[in-house]
Length: 149
Image: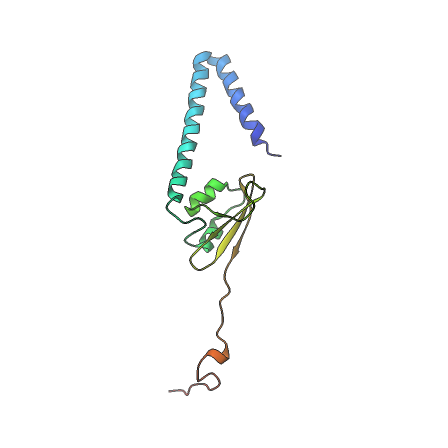
């Protein structure tokens, strides 16, 4: 159960009541001012993160391996977007839980992130397999080792 949905509003109401009983209406005004400032700071951060993400292709990251190393469980989607500086490519049906996003780099490696209620539940890195050279395709000296100089 997500207690943040209940605890944060309850804490706000408790702060307002405590401010009223301690300082009267000026205390309520101070608490409301602090709450509005807190909301404005979060809104400004969200807008900065989204502004940085507009200049990049959807689902692109510089290095999928580095992203995989930096990810931590329970990180928010906004935090992951801030790390990648790009929106993830949505791989699950729209508005369905869990949400799956993919970030791919230029070497075709990608990280699939699963978010449940906006929090990172799991992630996995997939790297493309490197094709090894077959002995038939290696040229005229495939069967014969070259002589030592």
